[in-house]
Image (cartoon, rainbow, N blue to C red):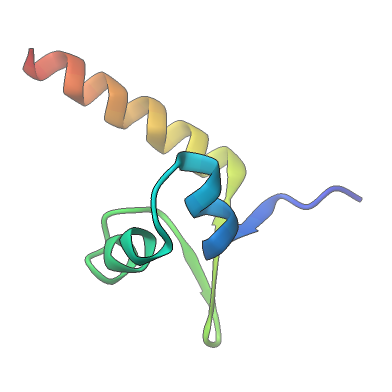
Length: 62
């Protein structure tokens, strides 16, 4: 069975930002995530969709 979630470290590498940036975005509710007790997980499908939405928003501003 293939994992469908990534950890904070893995998502930081996946989207190319620092882990500190990920934690800041989580704290400020800027990135979709799920908490299981003290752990934070990110759905690969949700992050891909969120990235497309963010890209679309940036193109609309131009």
